Image (cartoon, rainbow, N blue to C red; front, side, top):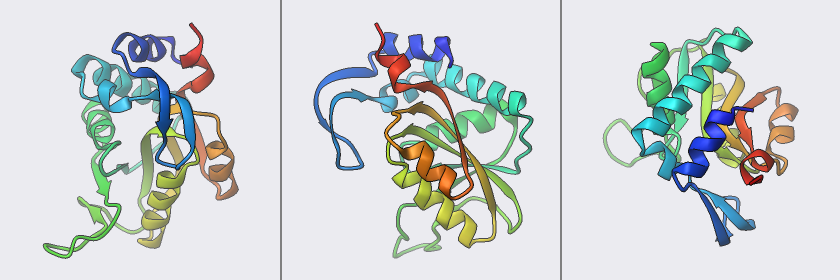
Length: 176
């Protein structure tokens, strides 16, 4: 757990209390607004530094960093700038114009890809991105997230052979 990340999320006002509907459709009494954090250059840099450190600590060698449009793109860009590893973007749906690709950026079959996420709850968007990347012949074995809400996403990812590493868990962020 990254105490620096936890403190940065709390200090930038990313932790909100109220009645919220999550992307998964679940209701929650709290919301972690990572977009508030990822649009703050100091917090975004700290997240990239912490993820870069995690990458080194785990000894992971990856060819690409992938972010899912829109929420995790700033994280992928920041981590790419921090590490020098190129990034790609996974679209949620094909556009009906331009290249009509689901993956934007340069990538090749056989490459090892690290997916980055802002918050993992049910892991729905992560599972989607993994499916898209694997269908294009890439290897995905690891996902980094800023926050794991500890609501089953980690277990769903493990079922398909993917390890989730988070900078903080929801229980860490919520402790006052």
